Length: 120
Image 1: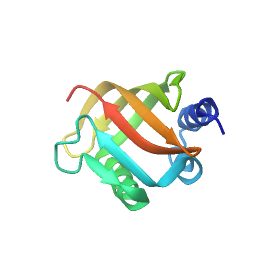
Image 2: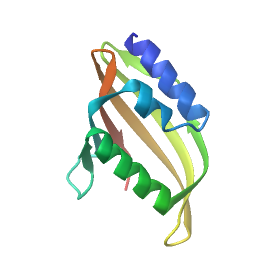
Image 3: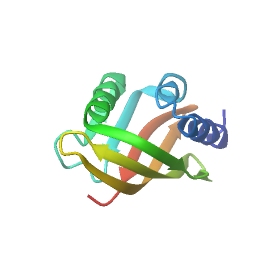
Image 4: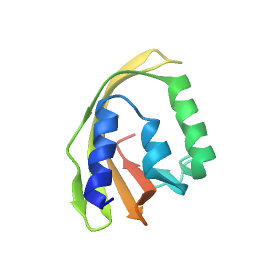
């Protein structure tokens, strides 16, 4: 698959609300996932186990009311996607809308790195 193919599949899955299938199909087992600059505790995880723990934390802490996903922008082995989310933080009950840019790196036909940028 090309970078464009992978980007299109990821966007399609996310628009369908399927955030698990991309991990199974599109991600490298050596995936690195980083939130913003990766300096806060838990902001950088590696491998499927790290991604799974991150996903479990997200589901425990946030209710997602809606998600909008942009078309991907592709450059060589990289692509980016904008996510607009309406969520409620379960522990506090605070509802908010957030916008983030996700940047993905492809190597050997798999996503090897993802990094999310957003205001905290």
